[in-house]
Image 1: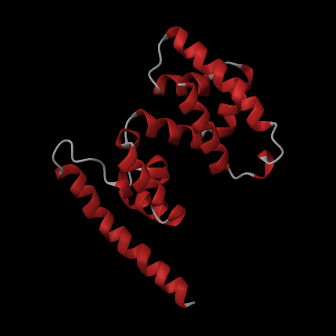
Image 2: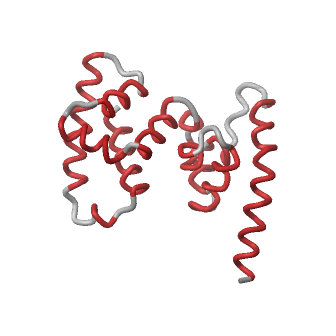
Length: 162
């Protein structure tokens, strides 16, 4: 019970602090980098327009470690098309997998549009994703994975393919 109260208190404080994170983001000088807790990590992908949700998600997911690492090592992954692609993959995973298996469809087309790929580049990336996805879904542990783990795996395939 004591740990639950501490967790709830921490989340409440983080929620209040998220407002100041969002304000910091708006007033930061150009080139100062993203806020790792609200602009990076899985939290930013899942809650791109809700800084408090991003902060809470990042803290719950892995105490913010992944978000801080991405902000430090590759700040360009904390915004823009990469975050939009990650969120889209997570939100539409099942439909996206079906489209990818067929080699066509609205969800696959939308993902390639989010990535701002051109003509033959789209075909090449789609074929690469399709081949790797076939390996992914046929793995013994695939059925045991959560949607988040599956979406992360697909995002990683996309990162290599694109």
